[in-house]
Image (cartoon, one colour):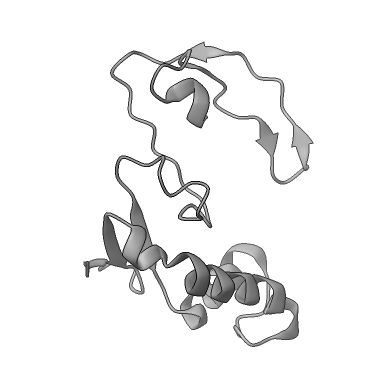
Length: 123
């Protein structure tokens, strides 16, 4: 998405390329974005060193592990305890990312998203 929708890109993209539930690659139709399009990309680890310079604007949603674990439990059926052994990889990777990539400092804005109904701009 970054190359074709970035400066000088072809603007050709696919709305979907992977089905998460089936873990299959999708062969969807190529589309062409209008010249004045804005790409909004959602994902984890987007403030890594190799991506830090590609964003014109970025938002970091800051949420405690206790809250993210409970949300994942509702969404995925995983344990609601952030310290549960089955979440060790996720929480460990997030801690490493927060420590080494400092997304709170790299983001254009930081939003405390602990309360879904009441996000707060904090930086």
